[in-house]
Image 1: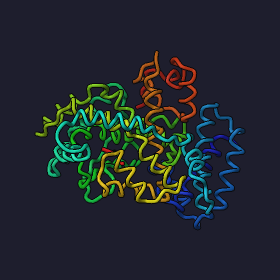
Image 2: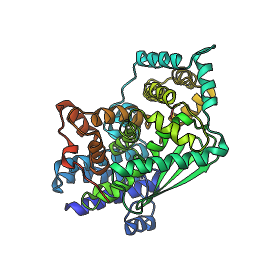
Image 3: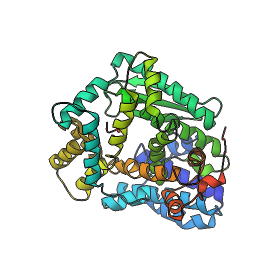
Length: 417
């Protein structure tokens, strides 16, 4: 099959699956004619779509894509096939679902790492009472007052937009709409609106902390998800497969991993001082150095929610056992642990914790490869169709080889804490 026709058929497949399971697509497909065509069709048959996914995988090697781009599309098709297997009623084992969806196996965390994180938090937050009590007090003191949330988010977003634009070109006309919304189960959510526009909703009921605001803005906006969306659109003329963004896919894992790990590059070490200065400007004080140390310790707990998913869906643990595990290691109360569990129990989202647990350490290690420029590496992740296997291959080979070398200096036009 000719390359354009195959990529069109992959997009049609994803659009049809999104009709069956809304939320498969991470933002609208740019081709409005294809969107209208699928919207006007009779309801799709998942068994037919599953056969189409397998046929497209067989035809992909004949499409003439360069090897890296072929691997990217193959991984997307594998993820779509896995979703369709689930939709048709097949009971896909949890580990197999994770590997097929995201291109990596789920790995249990190390309790010794979690204990070290708790030791660090214990030292950072001295005082009477157990760590969970002191952590709760810290979260309460660090909370952004609801009436100041709009101003704080806007100021931090403006700061990170300026810093990102200096080193990673932002397309002309890009924009972010910021919206503080009540009573949402998540902290923040970015929705790509098409073109170079995104809407970022921040939950006013999430008790967002001052110390986590800059990492959250990096993750959701600059240079995180919004920037990813903009750069993908700008790069898609040469690499049209980037126009299709799937939530449950290897691309999705790298998107979440990059959004988290980008903090190591922009602003980079010392970001606490940036957060302190920006929040001082809107009348909110934060100890920037302490905030950075606390968030660093919490990052060490990044596999806990994936552990909980493995306990629940692979090992058959009951809700009380899993909630207690989350509460213990994430140093949260039972109510918050059970809200996390409800997300892990959702059929569509049960494996999504892997995108953070496996994505961040993989991307962070790849960005920091010896002999490479982390900013150039970050640009290439924004612009190139790559898979987790590509990054793992680069890390195994060592040195500066990898997708960053193809585009040096190129310039296209829920947190646990």
